[in-house]
Structure formats: C-alpha cells, structure tokens
Length: 420
Image (tube, rainbow, N blue to C red; front, top):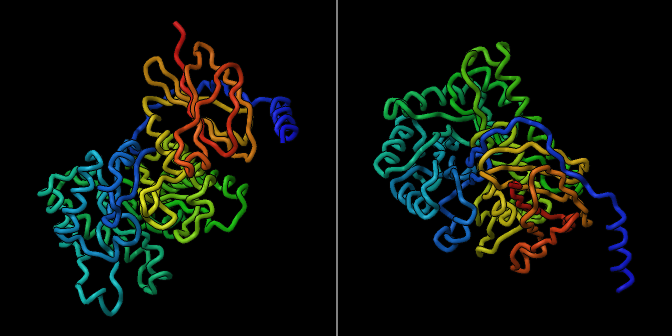
C-alpha cells in the first residue's frame, strides 16, 4: 500500500501544475439571483432544514417548481404555505408560476382547473394580500411538452402566446408594475424560437430550462455538455436581435432566465444528478449562467425531489448542496481569470480586499494548481468532495504553501488577500 501511495504522489508531483492567471476582462457586478436561486415547492419540508437551507443564502425562489404548477391550483392555502416557507428562507424575490395547462375532457380529482386570465389575476391579488415580494410572474411551465408528455397536440406556440397575452393583460390590470416571464420551455428548441417570433414582446424575461441528458452518458460526456450553457444563452441573444426571428420585440431589452437546470432530467436516476458529477456540473452551470448575463436562474430543485434536490428526502446533503453552499460566497464583482487546463474550471470574484477563486476539478485524479495573481496572497483554501459530503464531513482544508493540490472531482474555494 505504501508503494502505491508513493507512486501516486510521485505522479502528481511530476505532473505540470495548472496555472490560473488574470484574463484582463473588465469586472462585472454579480447578481445573487443569477447563481443562488432555487425552485421551491410546497412538498418540501423546509421547516426541518432551515439552518442548512439558509446557509445557501437563497437570493431568489421560483414557485411552484416543475410541472406541478400545471397540475394544481393556486389556492389561498397553497399560497399561505408558500409564504411560510418563503419567510423561513429569508424572503428573497419570488417568481410565481401561473397555471396554464388543463387536461382535455376533465380535471384532476373533479376539481376545476383555475387557469383562466381571471385566475392569474386572483393569484396576483393573493400575493399582494400576503405581502409577497414577486419579481416575475411566469406563464406556465414547459408548454412545449403539453403536446407530447400530456397528449394535447392543440398546444402550439400560437395557442400558448394567446394565453400569455390574455394572462399578461389580466395581471397588469391588477399590478401595472408586474413583470412577465416565459415560455419556460424544457430546453432551448424550435418551440422557443416560434414563441419569441409570435410574442417576444410580451415577455420582460425570456425563460427556458436546461437538461442536457437523461444520465445515460459517460462522465466525460456529462462534463462536455457544460458548453450548452453559454451556447444557448448566445443563441437566444441572436434570435432576439434579429427582426426576422423577433419581429414584435425589436427595440426591447433582452433579459434571460434559466428557470430550471440540472445535468439530467431523470429524477428517478442518481447518475449525473445526485452524484459528484451532477453537483460539479450544476455549480459550473450556475457560474457560467451568471457570467454570460442570465439574471434569474433557479436550480431544480431546492430539496426532496427524488434524485433532484440539494438535500434528499430525509434532509441529508448531496454534493450539489455542498457546491452551492460554496457558491453562496460568489458575490461582489467578477475578476476575470483563465486556466491553461481545460479540465480545470475556474471563476473568481472580488469583494473589498478579498479575492475568491472557485476551482472545479472535473477529473478523477488529484490536480496540482498554481495561482499567479499579482498583488494577492493566499490566506486559505478548502475543498468539497462527494466522499466528504457522504461522510458528513466539513470542507477539507488544503495546504496553501506553494502549489495547491486539488482533490479528485472537487470544488475548491481559495481566498486571497490583496497585498498592502
């Protein structure tokens, strides 16, 4: 065993250290809702995990998370439960989802679906009476799947846009300052394109979801899919700016939100979701969304949603929780850096005289890292790994003298202080 350890250490020391250097990019303000937002549902036992959840510093919440928003009505009781959980989580800005879909030929449990413009307006009135801080009202959830997953082919982009305009008008009549978001499609696709073309002018925030896989691919394929984050943000920017693809919204500013995201959409499968790969992918996605300009990006989901959820059904943390707990420190302004190792993802923020580096090692082997940031000195470094999370251990402190050694499949937070 000693021989194997010595050999592994020798290989690590002989490997060329990855180097992080300043990129010279202009700093940009970090919007907390772009990196520390989460989907919330009334099925989540928030009261049982208040301390752990508030350690994430939730900066925005979307309710009700997922397609349950098109299965259940916005009743006074449901809204009161939302207020209770929202209060426990610090009362951050909310995105409230209106109900759009109803099943052809009937409703669940013989309860009439409240999905009319008048019902959307009534939800706004309830939110006002409860004193909720609503940033956006999102019209429905994943309408591109109504035809396939819900067996109702009548839901074309044109029909959806008609609902958007009707609900928008009803909401604005109650609250003229309300902001409207949508279409919250399941992934950027032709349905999103058609919706922007038909009713781009109806949205204050263009929203979509990002689920690159169903967890069937290799770890390398899962990590490679991270490129879709910036690709899709840029794709929507191009659609928005072109009069041919956005004829009705020309001249309007574009704001984007990825209102659900995870590497895999399969709640029943842990691969690339509740494991180390899923946690690291989610953290990197949040950082790239933030830096690419998306402003309201709730991860799916906060807790207790099968293999989705930062905390599992019993309240135990996953790697994704540990990663987002570290991202609660991604505040202030960006500080552009580059890594010469494509397998090592790096991001940096600056607040006052402190510089924080977030380094994600996507490889199943330790990686040496050298920080070349003139004018700063390292004052501490801690890493989170899946093994430590599963063993209920805190982030492990790393030796900061000289080159740092990043553990396999880890997120490391390094804090530096400016020199006098």
